[in-house]
Image 1 (cartoon, rainbow, N blue to C red):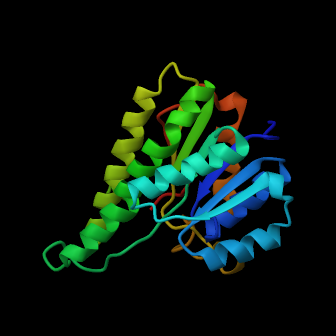
Image 2: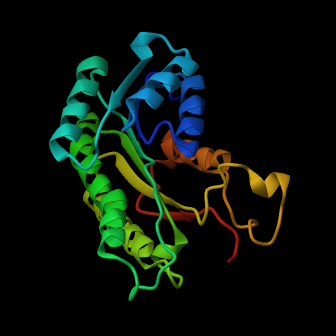
Image 3: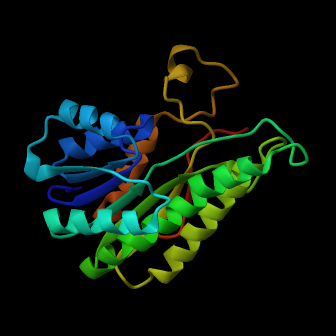
Length: 237
């Protein structure tokens, strides 16, 4: 797999998963456009990567702002000349209450986090991938989208919407050379607990490195026929 000179947009780049995949792509020679809402975290992360300026661009962006998100895409194309890959890694969870108890704000937060950000980044970035005749879109979802658990309704609803968005997008991208796929994780094991303190509870968790390896496959030319799939990255639960 050769990612050298590919232009990769990574949202949530400073997060536990985003930072791992960013470093992996940097080692592979990709050119990186890193998006996050926190400019201080972006600046610190950029410095830690030590990449030359021609290979990296960081932008603080509110992905709930459609206009701002499209402006971010335009700046990326102005610098790099194209966009090849969109990794939308923004996440978030809220829960612990039944649907009869949950405040309206919980559902709004989950729809914003999972549906509206996905919608806005798709509209802003995917047209540039289509222009190339080659591209990859990858997002992270959850098995709870299709198998909700009690007291997790807002999260499940948000993830269900994100899955519907991506599966629709995959159908609309047929014949363009661009693919759209999902990785399903129950819990992203940022602290690598299942390795240091394995238990039945964390056996189904997924480390950032495991997700990163799957992402790298989906970005490869060899995965060009993989489109509109949900790949389970968890054990039984």
